[in-house]
Image (tube, rainbow, N blue to C red):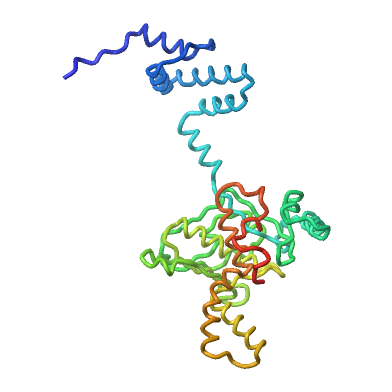
Amino acid sequence: MSGPYRKPEPTWLGDKIRQYTSLEPQPDESLGDTATQLGAGFIPGVGQAMALRDMTRAYKDNDYLGMGLSAASLIPGAHLVKALKKGSAPIQELIAGRQALKAPHAKLDAAEGFAKAGDSPQTQWDKVQAYKGPDHQPKWEIEDKFSEVHNTELPFAQRKKLVDVLHHPELYDNYPQLKDTHVYGTSNIADYERAGAQFVPDAYGPGKHAIEVNARTPEEFHKFLLHETQHGIQNIEPGFSKGSSPESAYKRLLNDKLDAIGVMPDTREISKLKEQSMPAYLRNMGETESRAVEKRMYGDKRYQVPTGNYDVPIDDLWR
């Protein structure tokens, strides 16, 4: 058993604090000095003095990165964590068009002009934060860093309105008709195959849409909800490619086949069409655009045009 605990001599500790907060160059430190300096940084007042020392030294050396890092360490820990959390908050970016009430028509006109001149979507985006989509429609983004979901306890006891579930002021300022979209939330945690969502246009009459979400977690619910809300925008914007489903893709493939051969395909052809329906659904442009919205949920992607987040090559899109 070791002897009784003895506090460090005040002279030793004072000397160390003076050394660690001095602006003068210090001799090479031992491992023990480094450990002691790290611990001293947690002493109220000493840590801030050390940060000021580092910032002053960095200033003298024209080390601007060092100055910034030292300044950040002056922020109390809890506030720094809060600031970093706020800075990395989700950026919900929904892709909008000319029907939005706050649409930047001058930028949309400019994007169409740049596209006509041969500029790529990325170049259009870099110039005016707007672009002409693969469906030949000019587009821009609604951004709201403070968008969040509410009332995500799953399953819902009853259907709710989108405005009560998704807090997204910019969305409703541009498309107020989406506020009353009915939202059904269910949870099937054990059944991973059934997780998903769908947008049902005119489910309760003209303009009365519904979104059905089957999610396993609140985060997944948020992602699915934004995906389906993008379909709601597509439904409002003339010319925007709409979403689809494997069933709709199959019907379209079957109709195309009927038009091509003039008779009902045989059983083997029907089986092939069913196999092709899922890949065709995934290549649907409206679905690809909505998946791009999901991808842009976290992290600042404004430098990249939304088509840069497509997971299907533009030439392979099914419009």
